[in-house]
Every structure is written in structure tokens, then in C-alpha cells.
Image (cartoon, rainbow, N blue to C red; front, side, top):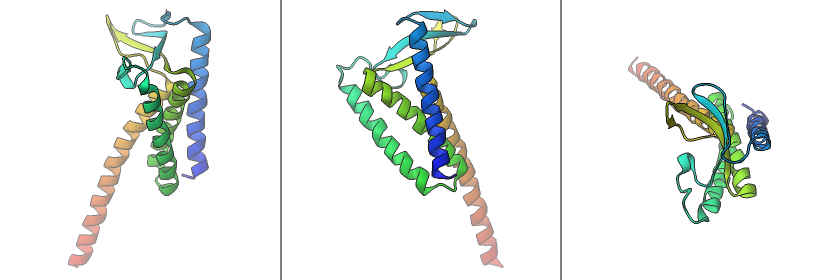
Length: 168
């Protein structure tokens, strides 16, 4: 996958993420929710920590720590997108992760927290609220796992073919 396609996908994720966060903040007040179905609400909440509000109770240092991790990861991802540009699924996975990381990084730097608004639940149990960036990161991570199995299978087949050729 050409680098500009990968960066284009990341840019689309970033734009959709920021636009949906802007939209939700324009229609809801903090803590307000809109029931959509019997298992899903739109809710406006802020996360100063990482996934599942990890470190959200810290004294504020986590904002810059998590921002540094996201910025560093983004640079590494851009390098990997260039280096492995012929690996389509790998690049798609990294593009989704990059777009999500940049969306949450933007929030952390400009707002001091990440805007979350997707609230899924069963009965009284609510999954921690999340956003489009988190969804893209999750989907990218799942695709990376799928790609790793495909890559392992491909290497196993190549090794088997090489062994057969040597035996002949």
C-alpha cells in the first residue's frame, strides 16, 4: 500500500473522530446522555487517563506521559508504513491505529482529556465509554493479530516448500 494511501486512511479516521467529538460536545453537556437503543446511549464524558480510564485519577502528569507515548508511536507507525508498504493488511491496520492515536493525542494536547461518547451496556453494566479513535485503534489491533496469523502461515508454507526442494 502506498504511503499516501495509508496516511490518507489515517487522516480520514482523524477527521471523522474529531468531527464526531465536536458534534457530541455541541449537543450534550458533560454527563448528559441520549438513549438510542436498549443497549446503547450517546453520552458526553471525559477521560484524563488511558484505556478504561487507567491513570485517570493521577495528578495530571499522565496527560503529557500519554501524549508522549502517542506521539512516539505515531512516528514509529509512519516509519513502519513506509518500510512495509507492500504489506497491505499490515499497513491498513497501522493506518487505523495511527488515525486513532492522533485523534486522542489531539484531545489530550488541546483539551487535557479525551472526549468519549459511545456508551454500550447490558442491564446496569456499562462498558467504559469510548470514541471513534478508540474504535479505530481496536479494529487496527484486531487486524494486526489476523495479519500476524496470515504471516505465520505464509512463512510455514515457504519453509515447507524450501525443505521439499532441498530434499529433492
